[in-house]
Amino acid sequence: MYNILIVDDEPLICEGLTQLLSTSGIAIKGLFNAHSGYEALDYIRMEDIDLLVTDIQMGSMSGIELMQQAKIIKPWVQVIIISAHETFQYAQLAIRFGAKDYLIKPLNSEQFLSSVRHVLLHMDKTARDSEQMLSDLNDGFRMREPLPVRMELLKSLLEPHTGNREAIIAELAKGHGIDLSGPYYAVIKARLDLESGGRTLTKRDDELLQYAVLNIAGELLGKEWDYQSFYDSGGTVCIIIQWTEAKYGDSSVDKVNQLEMIGRSLHFNVDKFLGFGCVVGISQILKGADFLGVTNEQGDKAMRWSRQFKDHYVFYYGDFKWGVYSEEEPTEEEINAQNNLIVERATRYINANYAQKGLTLNEVALKNHVSPNYLSYLFKKNTGCNLWEYVIKLRMEESKRLIQTTDLRRYEISELVGYESPEHFSKIFKKYFGVSPSEMKK
View (cartoon, rainbow, N blue to C red):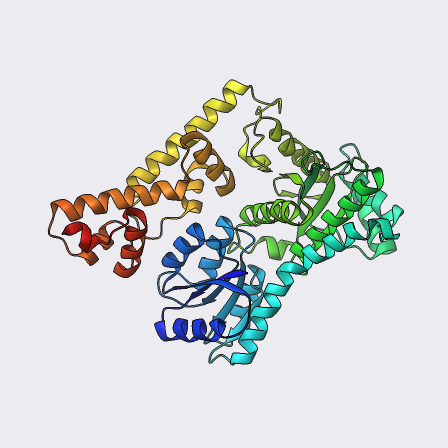
């Protein structure tokens, strides 16, 4: 059963698509409507949305911006873009940000339902593939092992003391048709926690699970990313991601956020479909093949932080302040002091800006020079409260004060506490307090 969110600033379109989906026979648990990007983000934060269907042009926040913010919050949310503009640049941008389809208004009903069915079925494909691999274990299933020579060449690229990496890249291109010319690279590493599944595993099970993780990574990265994936001798899955000069120069994409989205989606899907925990380490993006060994070390170091944070699973190397000269791991006291400072700064920034329309987790994280993923984790760990729940708490308490002590109208209060739509403000208010603004006024 799926939850679907439809976003369009034209209410009739939302109503029409809701009616169409509700009578389609698709296994739908909940249908939600929003008329702006900011309203949609609240649904994504508060509900388990599986599929986002959004118009591309909606006033103060576009569908592209909404998709970016939605995937920072929940990277596994699938997206279909609808647009009145049959423009290649729009479609190209939407697909690059991870949209699964781009449909032109006026929508053809059958085409729309076919697209929705295809996206929802694709969400289950990785689960079916991975479960099939595990069920086939005792039936003589044979994995298509990566070619040993190719595997060894890729592993040697990431070793810290490898000499002429350009020669290895040339051999991969000539002998295996693999282009790793970069010049920008990052490494994502994933290690299964085999004890977390509660099962006794043989060596054969280990190998099959590694292969399943590679399969999940391939499904997530698809054709949108330029990458190579393999597993090293220690059983860790390695993903080398590269960008050309032209693609890296596209500043419309926050690439670190995208890497974290991949990492969080990988962890989510491994846990959901394989039933095992997974620690993911993400390197910084560095220029030049000579730094591939460094990115590999950074991925390993990032994973090592799971020792300090056993309830966190995706780690970006740049979030942690290693010694400037020695690259030594900070002490526990230094880590706690740094993390407390991050949360204090974030809290101060939110207290000063909670009424700002369009306030996002990404904005708060940028002010603290950490990733949204790590800030969310630290804020919840240190305060016991989800970061956006804290924003809503401040907005709701202030709106309650204004209702009880002033004669301001609902739309004026809504504006003052950061909501675009009085109707959306009323929904959030009633969900938070159990009564509507007008009922509280009485």
